[in-house]
Structure formats: structure tokens, C-alpha cells
Amino acid sequence: MVEYGIPGLSYVETRGAAVAMITGGGPYTVTVTGTQANDAALLQVTQMVNGVSEQSTVYTSIAISGTTVATLTIAGPSAVPSPLQVTYAPDWPIQTMPGATLTGDAANDVAAPTGILSLDLRTRTVTVAARDEADGSGLASILYSLETPPVNYQVYTGPFVLPPGAGSVSAVATDRAGNSGPVGQAHLRWFPIIKRH
Image (cartoon, rainbow, N blue to C red; front, side, top):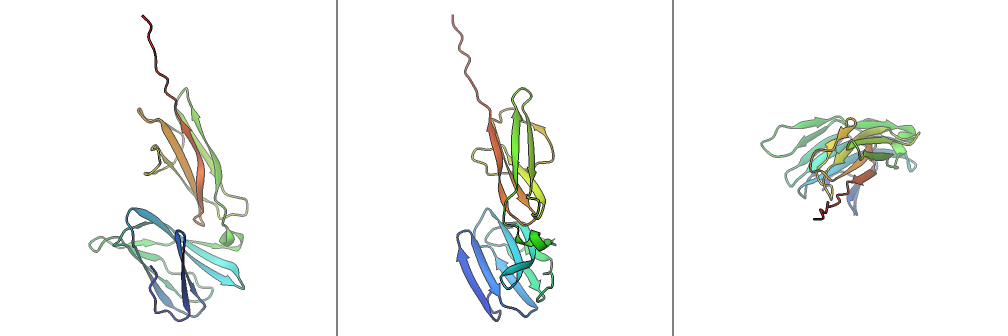
């Protein structure tokens, strides 16, 4: 939910997103509060001129719960927003997120990275490769999960061997603009051994 009280603010909720539009001026302080549990959010501040993005600042992977409060200051036209101050619970320390500031083509990046996940069945080694489009914002992270369906993710830092008992792996890649998409998945197939007497 976006805090009201800013002159010229219009606010629209769409599937999976809330958009607040401020026509100009500033500085303004914007507060976002969490309304649901066990989710993650992306907060993006885009400065537009004649309908074209000039600059975009992206804050990614903000954990959301009913107690999450995130605050930033928008100084005005052409100014980079302040770092995001996030409190996840009343008794937790405040965390500061600088955000990734994008300009030019990167500020208009709406395409998710692409890539490939491969699994060597002989060695059980998983390798993931991903890249962003040439004029995109650049690759930010690759995450993988050993669950089906995937719920919990870990940061991919290089090839790894599937641990015993793991039968599947999937991966997603995210760019600096916050666009995220699946890279691939693989499953081990288990075949029963039937002994004949």
C-alpha cells in the first residue's frame, strides 16, 4: 500500500503490482507497507519525460510481511531517489538498500534474462548460464531451487553436484531492472530394479 497525502498522486492496483504516479515537484517521502506474508517485492521508481523512461531506480528482493515498512524520499525531477530504509519488524534493525539506478536503454528494460540449465546425469553436476539482452540492464543474479514446486531458492555461484536425495533442480535469472524469468529445469529419473529369481 502506498501512503497518500502527496499532491497530484494517482494510484492504481493491477495483477501483482501497485503503481503510484506523481506528476512532479518534491521532495516527497513515500512509505510502502506490507499487507501479506511470505512474499518478496520489487520496488521501482521511474522518472519519465513525455512517456519515455529517463531514469529508473530498482530495489529488489524486499521481503514482505504484515510488519514490513519501506521508506524512500523522491527529491524531484532528474534526482536519484534516496536509499530505501526497510524495517521488517518493530524490534528488528533498519536495513538500507541503495537500489540500482538505470539510465538510457537499461531504464526501459522490460525483458527477462534468458539462459540454460544443464544436468550431467553421470556426475549429477548442475550448470546454469544466463545473460541479459545486449541493450538490457545487465544480469543481477541467478537463483536455483531443489524443490518441486520451487519455493526456497539459493544463489547460484557456479556448477554444483546435486545432493543425495535431490531429484530435480530449477533456476531463475533476474536482471538489474528487476525482470525475472525461468532459465530451465531438470529432473532425475529413477527406474526400479527388478530382480528375477
